[in-house]
Length: 246
Image 1 (tube, one colour):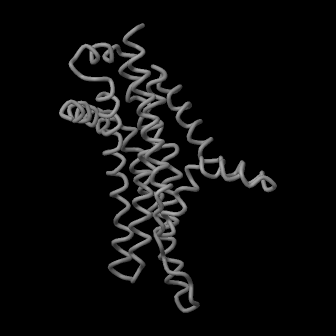
Image 2 (cartoon, rainbow, N blue to C red; image 1 turned 90 degrees about the vertical axis):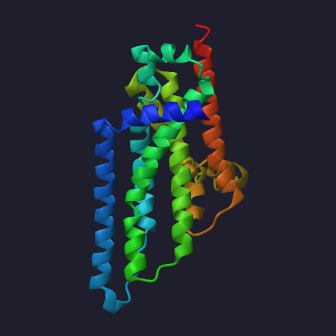
Image 3 (cartoon, rainbow, N blue to C red; image 1 turned 45 degrees about the vertical axis):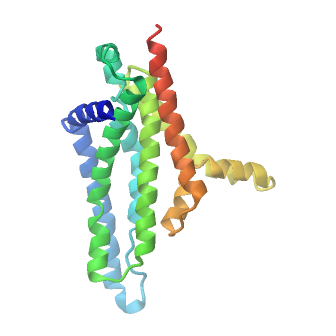
């Protein structure tokens, strides 16, 4: 555990000095802030007509969609940069296991992601201060957002282990995420075959998030994201181990 934290702390220092990290954090804050202000404005203008009250649902759905782009950008350098600069070979000579390197890198990206998620907490706090929203769906939505982001970052970590070129790592991660995001759309074409449709829906990143957004937490949704994280990090570890024999 100590080695994992050492790797994570080192990587966090590298992430927080990268301009792209701040660019994505600022962009996400501005976009979600704009959406929230639009909701508030529409509610105030339509209050006398029984308009729907503002919620965090639309904001968090937009946030998770944007993470499909931001996640690969955050993780593309985690292992690719180490391979390109040759520091990965030096790191492997230290008493640190490959799995500890992978988990440490992933943990650093996850901590930065959680910092971005924390910036959105101002919206439910405003709703709680001036309104009476249902707290349950807000809590489950944020649980889903955390699991979603962790899965995205794990896939990005795997893609970063596959190539020393950061652009290639970004494209591979984004391609995998886009496929998993659109599988439910593919499943909708199999209207005459419920089994195939169900398989595609169960593979969808987005479909498993929907339950969290409606206030429902099921074991299969949680296990899905945990499985994506575990498989991705396991595969990344095996890729690093294979480099020892090259």
